[in-house]
Image (tube, rainbow, N blue to C red; front, side):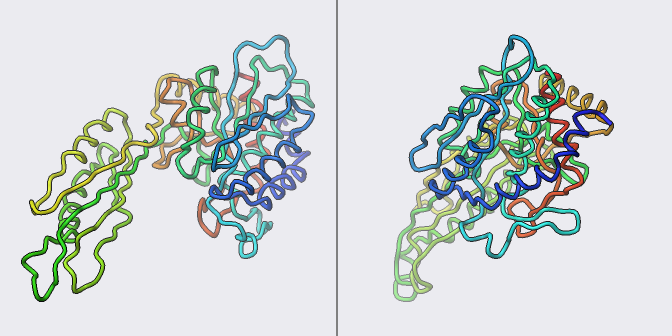
Length: 380
């Protein structure tokens, strides 16, 4: 058995224990104090492994954090950036109905899959390199963002700055599917808001004097649905709509929030022109369009393919195979890849149920994922 895999298997109980600690320290995006408690916990669990963790204030959000590990090897050339996020989609108190537990070969709990296990894996991967005195050529920086689940509004600049000084970016988001595929392509993500201003009137006494914003919005949404192009990987989803005040009033206002996904950055500008080029069917109404692309797509660039190939070779040395996939969701890796920095995503846990009540990870896959992270860092 490969020494890194043996080390991970030997410490599996400790890894599971750390995952449990992380899951039971709830950290929803909208609760800065809770996120900060989690950051403090991570700082305590990495104490003595590197330079003191630096905390970066983020206004209304929890602190972002950076930890540079001290690893074996001579003078370091360049840096590897490992990306994670501390925030989850689960509100405080979720543990009461979704407690951390182990059942039938899986670990359950809010945030266990997305993505607290990934953080625990990386800590133990760095511990393996230290314990086994395996030389590492690069400096290794772990950055944990506090606002990834809500679009990374305060951490994006910090992520991009760190990426520009790095030779590779490893994203600790969960793997895809039961085989644990790495993510070598992600769609770009954006949001548009369409607000319709109409003219109110009494639906019975003065119907013709009104211009219904609700009816105009319905017509616009039918038009917007035509922006979807599955062959190009473009999806447009009006996910939230609202309007009107009463059923006996011709609606003066209506609005929709629309999710967009694109597989290629070159589709962003034409799609934006289609949104901003919308014109009312009823000229008595007016349209207000805001929003745009939030995360650029993570595309299969030559640099990203080379990094995946390195991970695949590392897995084969450990005694297993690993594959790649493309997914529709975004991550902070989208930002780094768009800058041209080699980026590999999905290096975290194997499991299922992200953002769902059945969120879980497969315990038998823990050692190989920890060993893969350690081996990849050593190869780079």
